[in-house]
Amino acid sequence: MTLTYSQYMLRTAIHSGAGTRALVPDLFRGLQAKRVVLFSDHGLEKAGVVEKIKEIFELTPHGTGPELAGIYLDINQDAGSHDVNAALQFAREVSADGLLAVGGGSVMDTVKGVKYALHNGLTDIKEATPGGLLYLSWPEATHIPIPHISIPTTAGTGSEVSPIAVIYNEEIKMKTNIIHPFINADMAILDPELTTGLPPIITAFTGFDALTHAIEAFVSPSATSLTDAYALQSIRLIESHLSTAVNQGDNLTARMEMLQASMMGITAFSFALNAIPVHNFAHAYGALFRIPHGLANAVFLPVVMEMLPDLYLPKIKELARALHLETTGKNNDALLQAVIHKLNEMQQNVGLPANFKDYDIKPDALDATIAAVKMDPAALNYPLPPELIRAVGERVIHSQKVSV
Image 1 (tube, rainbow, N blue to C red):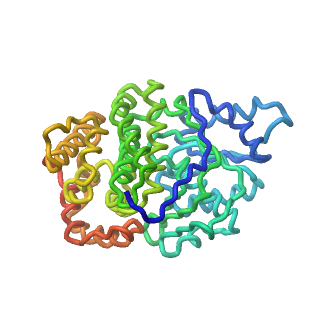
Image 2: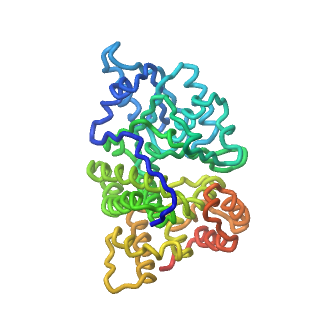
Image 3: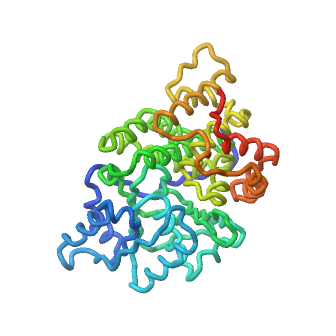
């Protein structure tokens, strides 16, 4: 427990439960929005999710709530600055005064970028992060008075409540970060009915994204009792419910618990932010090879834990217990190996790979990964030596499984 300065803010109001999407127009009315834009993607349009949200506005009696001023769907996976800038232009064209994000992390982060740009009069979001990172806190960061609601359709990023927007910069091939205590949504709707159509593989790797948030938060040098409480409960829920959510996609209980776990995991992560080597690797490989962020975290998590044991050993007993492992009579080294083995088992149970062999990353690409890992904003607090970056890379690009 550190005695240095820390902060913890639960700013987003959470509305949870099946069917809670029906609250959206009234919530926007309470936020005094009149012209709302629904931001989503074409995959969710095909899945019928966009129509479900659109219908709610159509059922709202005329004059009693905000109107749906437009629907914007051209948002790509691992969204970049082009996605944000195009969405920003659309919002201005329809005179939007309310922002509704319906989707996974890419959609929700895009809308955060739109919100920040609208508030600051930007036309290009890259202006906000010329060096790859914009980190604003008190007192420079001020309230952004743009009504903003997020509805996650995946249980992974927790972007609906996090004060972080990750936006890919196509020009420099880097995942840039805007960190701002008022960039997150005013309200979040956790409606498990909107996640039941998520394919098993995406359910699996987004779940591991949430698990990585929670574990990195828990072992962080900046962790507090507040972040530990959220991190540990997130880990417990994911261990108990991820497999069910993957294998029984229509199980609303598992889907609800995963949404809650995702929200708690990112909250802990955001306010214990310090050493995040798994995310450091995931950002770099995602930018270079366009590997989905959750999948990258899933592959790197057990490998990084094995190769950086000193980061995890001090709190390994509590971590093992959160993963429902027996700790009696085992020393810390044995518990670390048991945790790594457990994570590999969880990977297998939900159909995730232990490496990136499907991406055909060549060994000569490892030089580029060393530079990318060292340049990523996540390396600021916990820089990694080139030898370790290469060693981890050799483990994940090859076809053999991690040994435990």
